[in-house]
Length: 262
Image (tube, rainbow, N blue to C red; front, side, top):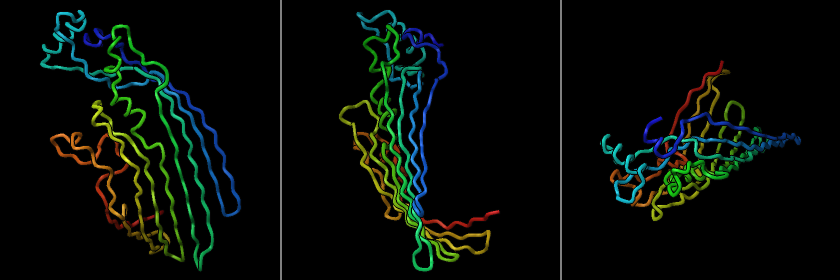
């Protein structure tokens, strides 16, 4: 435990604790198969990366702030961040999958619809010592809140069609990634990144019983995430979010795959 952490009343790290509950069911209705799972995960004393503390040498600053300011300057630093067991969180969600197979011509068409609905939120008060009164928004800043609660799409779904005839199969898959938020402490730079649909397509042929050749395209229509606001791009000129990645930002790519099964 560093002296700087002691000055802020941030205790030594301890293990996170969690409990989880799940409930699900499956049903086979002829060619239609249904699977639904629900879950709830509680995490206590979750570790976060705090905001930036700088201390102060102002005349009316507290002794702790003055000492922290001196410690930082002695280390040629202006701010310090810490890992801390600061919050409790709750994640709840539902996963659902529907599969339907039917004959089509001389082949079989399988349709899969899958969806995930999930939400993580901070519950209760922030675990802050009396020394952090008035500094709670630094201890758990807005960017950290967004990273915990809004960095993952609350909805993700995919619809896949897979047609098999003889040694051939072709597939078409559409995946929807729900909206996310870009983590930032600057109110003017807050940004909601809209949902996107990514389309994959491919065809495969069984060369032998154990060897299969597949060609296709992922992200067929060359879809990219929402561009960051100019102020969020910084001097690096990064156009797309790297802290809130719904999906990759490399665009379309073509592939050839050779699979060997034993």
